[in-house]
Amino acid sequence: MKRYLVFALVGPFVGGFLLLLTTTYQSGYWTQTNWSEVGKLFVVFFKTLQYSYLFGFLPSLMIGAVDDIVFHIKRIGPVLRMLLVGLFAFILAAITYGSRGADSGAVQWILYGLVGFVPSVISSWLVHKYVEEPQPAPASA
Image 1 (cartoon, helix red, strand yellow):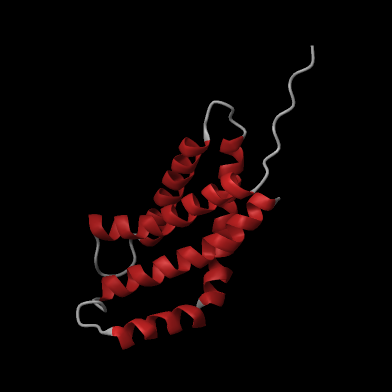
Image 2: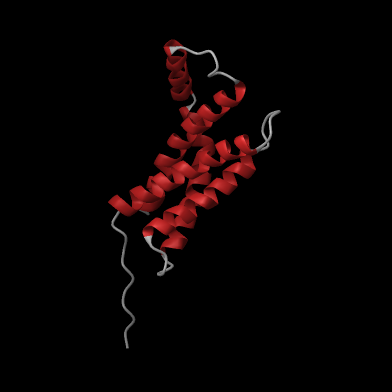
């Protein structure tokens, strides 16, 4: 249960920020910017944080479920589990967001894929590092 809580708290926060960075980069916002414009970016992020949680809550829980399923495969270690979950989230985010806007191409697909990859790997690492995971009971003879 703690696994899902970590994914639900971390995923929308980090993913929402990365999505905001990606969309501002795609719009050309960073070509002529100064420090006051960066401050405006954080103001927009905190004003839209509620929507990041509204729309990112269920996808984060779904990625948490994938992490939980992969955790129960005994041959897969924690690092491989983080990478598999991240790859799955990368593909889903790239498919979901990659066709947005007028631009299309490898850069846009990779940037939107990272919106899914980074939060899922961070959440999976936090679960591995700080959440006590129950060990499977040995089979009785």
